[in-house]
Length: 86
Image (cartoon, rainbow, N blue to C red; front, side, top):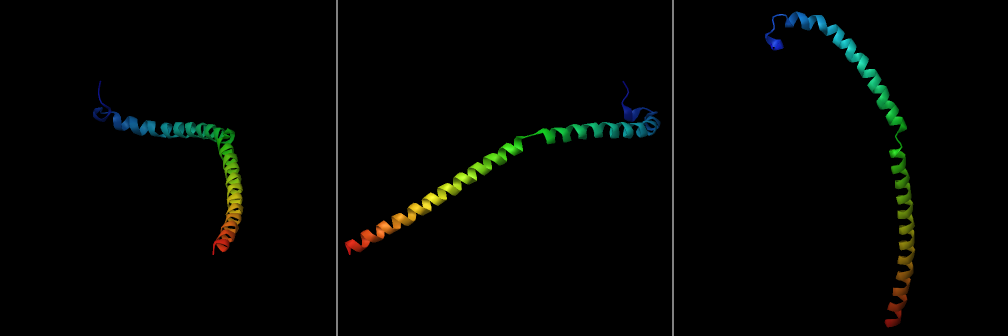
């Protein structure tokens, strides 16, 4: 077997094949891009993660509201106990 770089016809062959290779390459890229685009459109993983993020943020807002309300009630209770002890 002769390596391509040592073949005397390699430079001629490379020049003759180059235009067809580029055309073939371009013909192969477009269908692959169409397939990837269809997969991207059909993918619902992002929608699911957004739904989980909305649920988590709703739970976080509820916890913050409850803790804030309890903190205010607890502060009032400690204040009344403090005034009774003085």
